[in-house]
Amino acid sequence: MTHNVTLLVGDGIGPEVVDATTTVLEATGVKFEWERFEEIGESALDKYGDPLPKHILDSIGSNGIALKGPVTTPLGRGFKSVNVGLRQKLELYANVRPCKSLPGLKTPFENVDLIIFRENTEGLYSGIENLDERLEIVDSIARITRAGSERIIRFSFDYAETHGRRLVTIVHKANILKAAGRLFLDLAEEESRRHASVEMNDRIIDNMAMQLVMFPERYDCIVTTNLFGDILSDLCAGLVGGLGVVAGANIGDDCAVFEAVHGSAPDIAGQNKANPTALIRSGEMMLRHLGEVKAADAVHDALHGTYADGEHLTADVGGKCSTIEFAEKLADRVSGLV
Image (tube, rainbow, N blue to C red; front, side):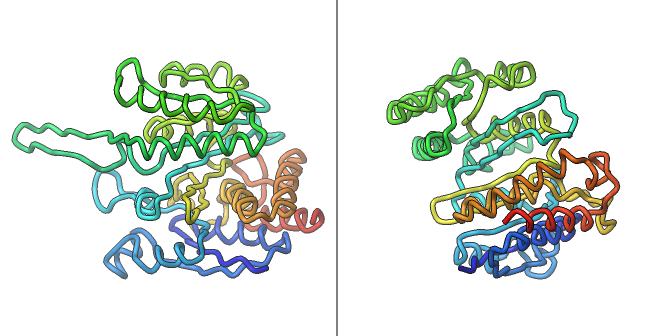
């Protein structure tokens, strides 16, 4: 069958890493019909008056799946994050961030294999802020709902059970944020009773941050609220080599967006030197989501083999390949495995 996929190119290094990734994915032999959109973020704002125009949302809603390059978000000004907009408007409530070591890539720890499940649509990222200009006071409200908490907790336990994971750790701040923390913990305990094969424990957020940089091997699946998940997912990416080598997915009941979680790196845009590993790993996640397990395994094995050999890598991880050279070498390896 042919999979119709919305392809959001992004900006900065987006076009380069997107083209590299589609090269690798097409080498699996899986048939794709890419519905490609060049304008998103600032370029879409200039052209359509909206950084996230309706026709893009309609495409993702129709296809049910998208692959997205990085998009620049202005700091402290300008338009709202396109990433946040996609998650909220499409109800992509589960941010799934696997952080798994790559062979041959020198990092603080070896054999890390963690997955962060981050609630994606509420918390402090609900965007509820009140500004008192006279007193120069800003109140930012972290909205936590039973419905929002239930679905991310259920998603994480279901994922752990179906993927043979052993442990779900609930991360909270119930010692200080007593009502929100208690709600999240109570719901997790209810869900845990439905999953006898998966162990559950919990950690306070600040202790969790320390635990992860001391004993990451003790943890498996971690589920938490939006802001805590945002922070921990980047921390865990640092354990395995940084944002340039980790995958990301935003999943809802009706559609899913797979994306590179790193920035748009405008300083190296157009120079054919960006590392596309993050988006390629996201593409592997997309293949699994589509049920193309053999193809996903080929991408996984080829990527791990390439890093283990260390001969055909981009400069940021010690190699000499350009973006497209890396992708073409990897694609050759993938085609030999399917």
